[in-house]
Amino acid sequence: MLNLLRKDFIALKSSLWMTMLYLVVFSAVFIPKLSSSIHIVGIYTAFATLSHGTMIDIKNHNHNFLVTLPVKRKHIVQAKYITAIIYMLFGVLASYGIHWLVKLAVPELNKPDYTVMDILGPAGIVLVLASVYLPLFYAFSKKGTAIINAVFFIIMIALAQPTAVVMNMINGNSLGGDGALYLILLGILLLFIASYYLTVKLFNRKDL
Image (cartoon, rainbow, N blue to C red; front, top):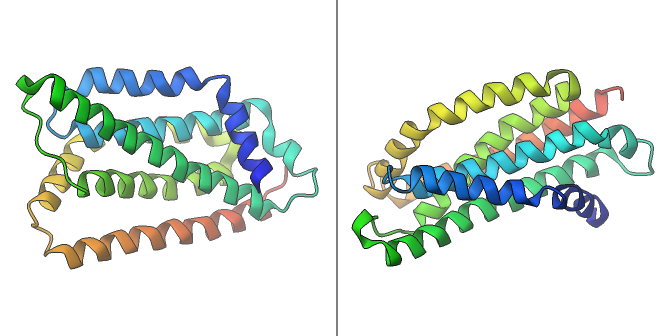
């Protein structure tokens, strides 16, 4: 498992500048304009990194090689889901750190005070996106990845306003209190786990 994780990060290392570029560009575009930029920057950076990682797999034919090794397919999928969590943590926490610095350095932007939910909310949204994206990626792989990424690109563009509305509801306790929020987060976690089992099933059936 550790070697599978190392494979993903070694593959991504050569284009690590792309991840940093995502973070810088999204921050420059959204921080001056949106009060919900902390959420959008984290979500966009994390998901763009995940998408870029899957494109590297396609380009290098990684799965075709991995299935020839004495490695179970479920472990290949597990590694991808773990890297999705790592990308999520990086994107969300990096966004939080940048916004914290901007709030101190440029008070004229009037950025709001940030709470734990400003981290948990985007993290949950990234996990939902990954839960839908990864089964599609493993089901269609090379033949459909370009279409899948195009569709998700459109979804990401449309996601900005709904994200702002949802996060305003969360911060305003409009969803029924902390109990409801934790139930939503639990539901997201269960969705992520169910997505993993679905992806394993789809990948096991796939001929490579």
